[in-house]
Image (cartoon, rainbow, N blue to C red; front, top):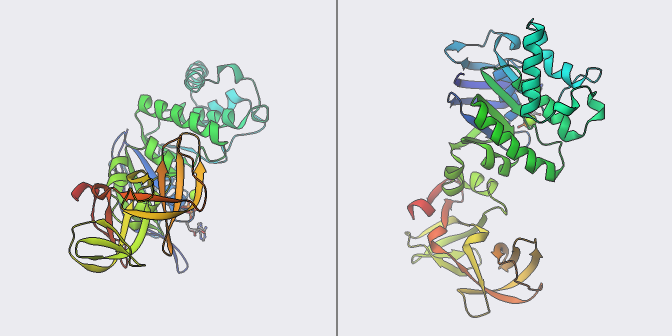
Length: 356
Ligand SMILES: Nc1ncnc2c1ncn2[C@@H]1O[C@H](COP(=O)(O)OP(=O)(O)O)[C@@H](O)[C@H]1O
Ligand SMILES: [Mg+2]
């Protein structure tokens, strides 16, 4: 049990700044997800918490200890990596038992704890096997069991599901969530997958180029994105970000097409944000604007319609039985209550959804 605090952490290699003066307070027992595109500094942040990388500047605190000088083994953190990091010559049992063995835990206690951890991740039947005789999902469970076999102060998980195929990833995600709510140990989880972040996190820190863009609950970052980057990163499909301006209370696209009443004061260089779910599709002449279909996708549970909007494109979600062809004309209606406005130069949100 512990909170983790980063105080003005910087990691620099020569003149490249991977993590740029970041502070972050992770609460005791919190599941905090560090989310961002590849290369934004997630793993580097994680490795500094683990003690595998030394910060160029700043402090790492675990509980009431400043741990900058502590070796990884003295920080009482357990890590799960993308590539599992199992010992190929050891059985599943010995892999799981390893963290106990190196700490000199008595045999009877080791046996009991390994059995308990194996039960929690449903590996009991595989304890005698070697990792090569396991599927990817089972190997991932071994890595997880090895982390939970002790009760560390902190779990650090770096893209632990990313080597699994899509279907397994979804079921492991649910298992991981279930397990994390049972264990209630402070967890820092790194991913570039926004759905994983949304589904697992108590709070998400969205990162870009070594800088945290927003820290908030999944609801916060989905419904009140701080800037255009967060807005475009969270949600599938990504939020439509349409360039234009505001004239007489109307948002007008860069091609001078009035799109929706936003009631804000006039200004240039505005980006309108609207999610695919908040654009209604109708018959020609029945909505606010007739548009030509650029592409139509049936994805099973519903449909996605991309339409040409002057030089830009906009994507709308249709109901599952909708069938349209490329080149057809439909009308769209933008739900004004769910629009966001961003400053196109700074990317900062100037209005939207919650405070419309
Ligand atoms: N040892 C290193 N030396 C130089 N640059 C590095 C080193 N490790 C990582 N980087 C760079 O730091 C940036 C952040 O890397 P990383 O934290 O691994 O990103 P992420 O995990 O978000 O994909 C990347 O541009 C990466 O190339
Ligand atoms: Mg990484």
